[in-house]
Length: 252
Ligand SMILES: C[S@@+](CC[C@H](N)C(=O)[O-])C[C@H]1O[C@@H](n2cnc3c(N)ncnc32)[C@H](O)[C@@H]1O
Image (tube, rainbow, N blue to C red; front, side, top):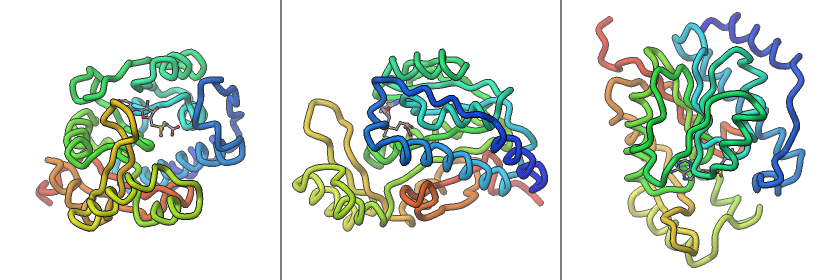
């Protein structure tokens, strides 16, 4: 997308009012309003950067997965007021809240989201803090699956726990218990993708990834191109992987 077009989108976004209604079920709001809203806005800055690098002409269809209770959804709606947005999450009340509050289509996900009918032809797929909670095999399978749901030249943006997350765990409030963290670090050192489950029945927890491992994983997504890997690209916290639906082996 041309810089001028991205700049016009940003200018319009900054003038629009953000719907600040927060769901009482929104556990992401536990961090307080300042962090909550600034992280949401910064997702849009990330998206604008990706658009500027991409060859996409327009953003008409968006998938916000996982939408949670709308930490980013409210800003997506303000940035792309006419876009058709699909909100998907395993937490059904979050999906219902986003759909009703910000306008769009809701889809209830399942633990294996590759089996969920999410639709196709998305110009933008925003994956805010999902790969941060699963092991490498699921992240890779989901990345490949979701990249096939993009429109031609569509972009996919996924956030990752990179190097900085070690410091977050150490001094900004532990994401997971010490025993699990040791398991994550061991996996990280051995394979570049550490993961351990939260206590409980679900296969859901915290991951920690080496940038080179994420790049290697993204290189295996067929018929796509890596746009960038940005350390601490989202709110100075998560790393950000951006890919586009354009064959890396396309002829000149
Ligand atoms: C850390 S929260 C992030 C939510 C939102 N993206 C945000 O930034 O506020 C992770 C979310 O992933 C959702 N989730 C976990 N497994 C999922 C799956 N298989 N399909 C869809 N959503 C899932 C959880 O319900 C939760 O809302």
